[in-house]
Amino acid sequence: MSQTQWMVQTKKADFHAIGSTYHISPVTARIIRNRDVVGMDGVYQYLYGTIKDLYDPMLLPDMGPALALLRQKIQEGRRIRIVGDYDIDGICSTYLLYRALERVGAKADYEIPDRIRDGYGINESIIQAAARAGIDTILTCDNGIAAIEQAALARELGMTMIITDHHDIRQDEQGEDLLPAAAAVVNPKRKGNTYPYPDICGGMVAYKLVKALYDSFGVPEEEWLDMMEFAAMATVGDVMKLQDENRIVVKEGLKRISRTKNRGLMKLIEKNNLDPERITAYHIGFVIGPCLNASGRLETAKVALSLLLSEDEQEADELAGRLKELNDTRKDMTAKGVEAAALLAGERYAEDWVLVIYLPDCHESLAGIVAGRIRERYHKPTIILTPGEEAVKGSGRSIEGYHMFEALVKVQDLLLKFGGHPMAAGMSLEERDIDEFRRRLNQDAHEALTEEDFIEKVWIDVAMPFEYINKAFIQELSLLEPFGQGNEKPQFAQRQLRIRRARVAGKNRNVVMLTLATESGYTVEARWFGDGDQFMKEKGESQYMDMVYYPEINEYNGNRSIQAVVRQYRFR
Image (cartoon, rainbow, N blue to C red; front, side):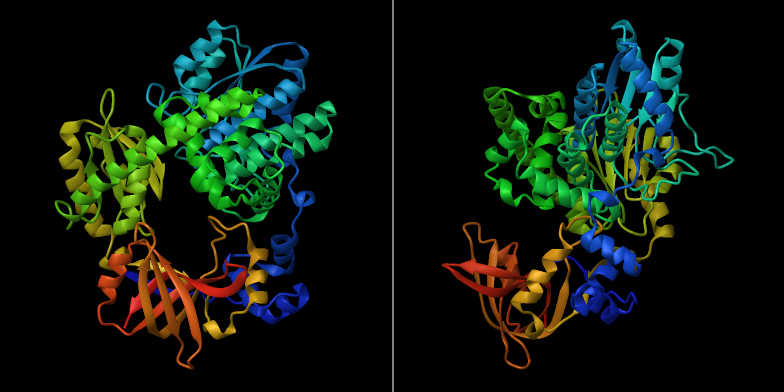
């Protein structure tokens, strides 16, 4: 395994008081505090928050003007075009707004940019096409906050523009927001915003607008609640923190997926052999989401949107099958890209602190996924470059301690376009400048980083002997679900376990079955999922190991027993 440093969380609170107030163990109270939940009210909302605790949409900046304008345009019979984005957040946002506008009698249609032809967000050609089609109002979702020139063009062509977005906002030299000249800009990241929890995705912003719209037109609240699963899918798919109202929406939305009325979603669940009664945030993030995203990566996101909008059984079945096939193709292409990049990262660029890898045979839409996988494997900032239509395009993923956007600012003279934030970025440059780009990024990284930055930190909630784990405690941990970004599965740790037995199992030799014993002689059955042969090679003659683990109930032949799922290990 890559070099890691195990760290135990040390956040403070009165865990016994929290435990007795909410009838949970002090250990569970500690885990909740480790998720940055503060105060008794915060713990209550975390454990028992309901739909009634969601924030009023009218608290969002410009929600009032946006709603008034939409009402006016709908009543006047003006044509409204929704412009979304090609990832799961953009697809779900577009779906939510289109369904809602249809429901209240608007003359609405939609457009989703093509990833390769149009690039990210709304562009001039989309504005011009809308003008030619007689569109009166453009309503963006999950994009538009950076569309300064495009908003000006829309105004020049006599169209109204309403922006709904959640992305960070660029600021001028005085620190003021640089906003497009739109009729309304609904974005919780605006300066001076008073929305209680601004870290929501584009789908959530759209969902809030739908609530305001439905309230305004007297649509029963139950119809809005029936759409919650799409706000939940957008939140998980866009890797938002599962905290505050995001947690409530995902928790409630996952329950609703089990009884969804959406034919397309049901077919997608069916094609992936998932149990609709047991859909978790993991299934959204790693199965359903990638299928929706695959259409925008390899074809057009309109395929995914058509699936969600489909009312026909056969059509939904065919579209779901097509998305599953596209995602399978995408997985194969990704695996080849990761293999090629790993070869270069481990050999030619092994000494580099920032990995800049050009993959001429990799599809440009997969660069970000490949960069993420290589970053995980080597724990180094990684930029994957691929050939584009006019220049080389790149996508980067970073590590804590390396601000990727600021690093690109220092070499912007080599870049045609770039954008991003501390942990991820996109850019384009001429192929002839790749080597210089790599050299300068690495030169700067040696000034900005130390070797300590390349040691991955593994955060442990509690250093807890396995003897203290019982079925009631494991059941209590289910109160913490759904797990995901910002609300990770708890991690426990124990040292000095004697390895009584270790064997590799699984068709692909990707499971290690372990029988361990604590210092007091207590037996622990454990499983580690990964390259079994590599595990045994690292183990060698070692008789003892430390582990970071998660406890779970193993059900087999009607028997229920406690086992440890090993997340990290160290041999002694």
